[in-house]
Length: 165
Image (tube, rainbow, N blue to C red; front, top):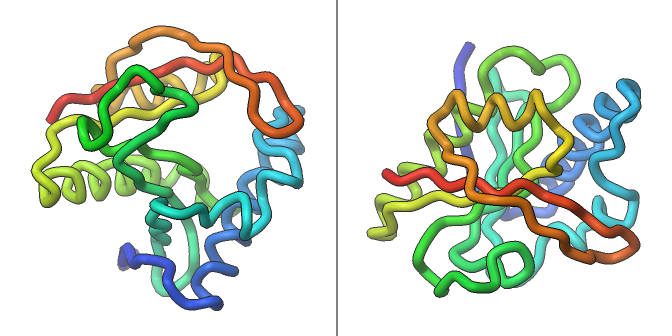
């Protein structure tokens, strides 16, 4: 299995990024888990200013995603810009679940942060996503707390995690 992580810059790569997100969302929906609403899966909602989209290719096939950014005023408003790299939209396409790709993306995010001279990763996820939380904790993320946040069309109760490099 050949792994390559690229920045999704072209329209084709951005569409592949969105396809992975939708595939992951569909997989969760089949399990009765609502991850993202359709309004959260549009190019306008995903490719916001300042967010860097990365696409993991497995043998050339789009398989996982992550958005990286150096500030998160929605979920981490008390933290200073540049104090961490924040990871959003970490997802794995249907057919690639259980292959360790989230860990590959987290390792990539850690390397990305180090290149910027940042030594902390932060992320959040729905507090009721126990399996996802276990993935983060197994990687070494430390649970910080839970926060309640309103985003377009939904109220979230999310667990916040931090990983020091």
